[in-house]
Image 1 (tube, rainbow, N blue to C red):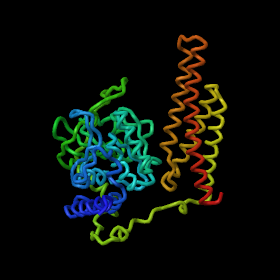
Image 2 (cartoon, rainbow, N blue to C red; image 1 turned 90 degrees about the vertical axis):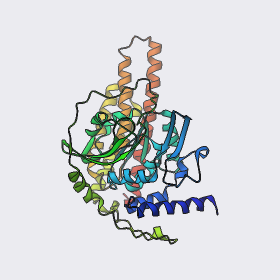
Image 3 (tube, rainbow, N blue to C red; image 1 turned 180 degrees about the horizontal axis):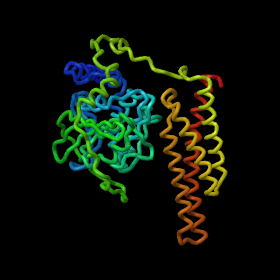
Image 4 (cartoon, one colour; image 1 turned 30 degrees about the vertical axis):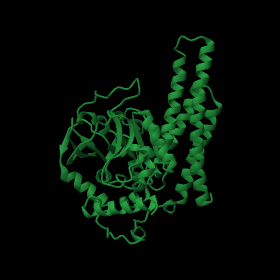
Amino acid sequence: MSMKDFYKNRKKKLIDALVRNEILKDKRLIDAFMEVNLEDFIDRRYVNPINLYADVPNLFYFKNEQNYRTISAPHMISIMLQGLALEEDDDLLILGAKSGYIAALAHKLAPKGEIYILEANAEIAKITENNLKKTKNDERINVIVKNPLEGMPELSPWQKILVTGAIEQDRIYPLLWQLDNEGVLYAPIGKEYIQIYTQIMRIRDDFYGKKQLQVRFTPLMTQLELDELELITDFNEVKIIDDPQKVENTLEKKQEKYMNKINIKYAPNIFDDISLEEEEGIETLTTNQLANIVSDLEEIKSQLNNLKKSKEIRSCFLCIDEIEKRIEHLKLYKKIFDIGLKKLQYHVNQIIGYNLNRKDLENQDLTETEFLEKEKEIFQKQLESVSVLQDLVNKELKRLKKLKNL
């Protein structure tokens, strides 16, 4: 028996056990577990063939006995991802990389959404990024090196936020305000050795909690590698109403079409027999909607060309303003056409930052030579971000025109 077949058999047995024990209930997640190979997210040095598809955590990073990371056990991953009640177009923020494995599974549940992973350890972030590229999951999953506790308010709202390490309750307050209406944060909340995995749902400006089970996680941040990193502690306390029934009732509506519809048997074609809900696609768009999307993307493309030509800061900001207006307009079509708007906005934010840095140079005590060198360096970085944006826009335009012959 080849190792590939060995792992496949062990994976099937693991899934069977999780279903039998009523832990794994989402038919989409069964497919995801079968499609995403855990071994692709672990360096060969750390692969233990016996543990790989056992229901235990798996080591993927090791520096010393005080500095190591594991991918959570499959039963815990099942609880996490099902607790989020992911829908196909949900945008998900994940705090803590876990080598990218959990994000790859989540992408199978929310293929039209965008996933951002925040990781403080630059080395782990690079490992995760490489894993996602290797498995061709990098188009919709992005890895950012920053303090996870800040979240990403500049790209909010988020439909779902997953915290993959132990976190104290007062640390989640800035994250809760980044949730969309009926958005869910799922986190192991508590101090020291024991935490409570908790669902917190935002309904307008109120937050409702449901405590689920006791867990034991390592802290979310065990090593901070950014010199300027500071924990966010100055947010006002958020009142979380303990109302598990309200959370359950709301999420039940989202989950019921994916739950409790599984008839598990392990024939060779078992996973061909599991049918998914039919997804909405490009055909749900009207001709006018398609024309509007193309118009917005073409205008963004035009403004990006202007950005490449213009070095004057004021002109750059005028281009950016127009691009952001178009991105805002494209949000109208996000649910019926899976455009990666957060990735577009992320690179626009980088360009804004570069222009602010250029403007800041004017207030620094620099010689003319120093000023020109620094300005050239910053502008070169801006051009790189503009090129990335152009590639993203061209890809979307090519997809639209090919599908509809526009």
